[in-house]
Length: 171
Image 1 (cartoon, rainbow, N blue to C red):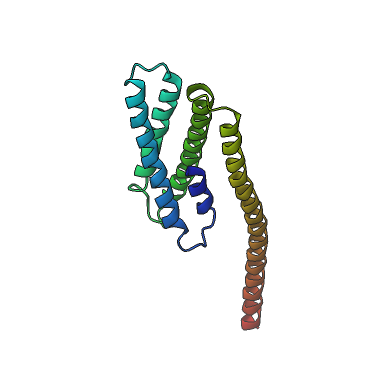
Image 2 (tube, one colour):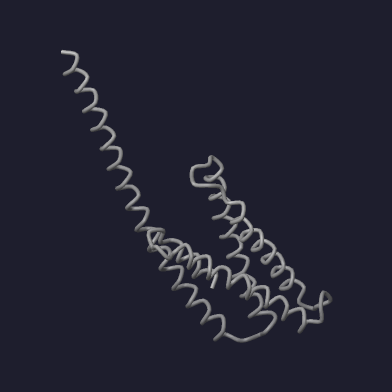
């Protein structure tokens, strides 16, 4: 769910995108907590033989909690702190996603020993999500350059028209 929530957020013009992103990420967070609770019940608490899987999961949930609580501390759009906050929010979210994905693979391979079909299916689904994300980001980057070059042209035309108006008024 977490990669899908990240993918949805790539469409900022999508009106429901932000709320859908929050809902999917919250559901992923709650399912992660449920997974840890199930792991503690099945594994007998802290003294589990799957310490690596448990520790990565706990780290992921703690960082996830920090990520979710960052919404409470989100500065307004006009605030100077908004840009660093957005940078941190994005990269913390990406880090949490990488940790979660790696822990899922670790669990499939070392804990549950599900076999090839499980990680192949998960890899195919994750690969499809990543391909859509890379495609969207490459389209967005291309448009960003076009928009930037158009705004630079508009600014230069505006400054030219302003300077020509001054010379007309001065004459």
